[in-house]
Length: 276
Ligand SMILES: NC(=O)c1ccc[n+]([C@@H]2O[C@H](COP(=O)([O-])OP(=O)(O)OC[C@H]3O[C@@H](n4cnc5c(N)ncnc54)[C@H](O)[C@@H]3O)[C@@H](O)[C@H]2O)c1
Image (cartoon, rainbow, N blue to C red):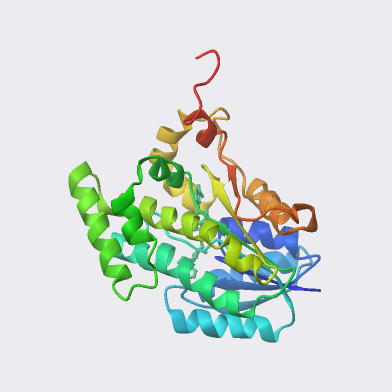
């Protein structure tokens, strides 16, 4: 059985993904919280699923490097599923940048070193990405396309502060959109490089999902639901099913793709809908 690494493995989506991947993989659940990991392992045990666990703050590159080495030592890595993240009600703008943007960068870079032919990675972005993608121009790309710049974190924070002032909006919300946009775009910018090693890399874009995070963002979810065809919370199992498909052989010709699981938000805000 190949190794399946799930970051944010103790979170709402992480556990649902572990349940679906657990029967056919050697699981490594990764989370910043030992308490949450213990509870997740117990939940999975009750379902007959065994998993190893690793505490790791993904915003610490040394920690992510050690994590990648540990995963590789467990056996051949077949999938890396990166769900760990923070939402605007959970953290300040600078912390959101560290976890959602830098954390994703470290996961992609460090696991690229240890993943091999036939494996695949899936990252989790957000519908906020699509709103950003429509408005992002050169000034944003000049920052988000250079994560290897030693000043990347500083420049990202400056960009976010400027956008928050200009839009008269809270910096944490802007940080979430910009950091998820980076994550989405960097995932897709890596399709060619990853395939040089025979690895696929894709992205899932959730809408409003019924997890602790989704419920904490109720006001924002109500605003975005107005632009969806399917005006309900998606389930963590619907995200897990999309992730399982993208990591499976059935998606063997799919890389650099974004699979929205968003009630039609991306579609309805892009294409003039018939009958409206
Ligand atoms: N729930 C939604 O409605 C929704 C919508 C769009 C996008 N998302 C994204 O989906 C992903 C999963 O969200 P969820 O709903 O399962 O949330 P969740 O809060 O249930 O799970 C996220 C997990 O990430 C972990 N985490 C946070 N910071 C970390 C760090 N520094 N290092 C390692 N782990 C860390 C948390 O402890 C938590 O267990 C997130 O990236 C989120 O931004 C969620």
